[in-house]
Image 1 (tube, rainbow, N blue to C red):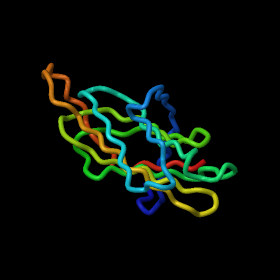
Image 2: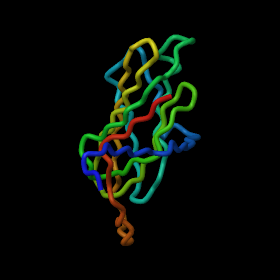
Image 3: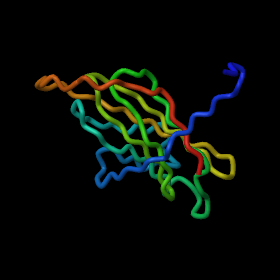
Length: 143
């Protein structure tokens, strides 16, 4: 086995749908300090969406999206995708607490728009269902 060989790990781009506003952020070109707050219960799976329609020029497109989690404790991320002018990632609430996730949207013209999400995993009755592992800390996808 050649230990000096480069290793390539490919992540199959997933996709998810969010029909409401619970985990959908409308990125603002004006109020950049806005944090989108969501509350989930353990084992709940939802799609985080960063919609940039109101923040970028009509003809501009998303080139790359990087999702970063501050501390890997309360949620797990998977299946990043770019669908038109939206960046998406699937999250699963794992343990009670908070998670901050930043979606960094890079455009074809070189501009970068970060959108921060705060997910609070709620306390509630414990049914023995918090056995999900958290992580990863970062996911990236190119258009």
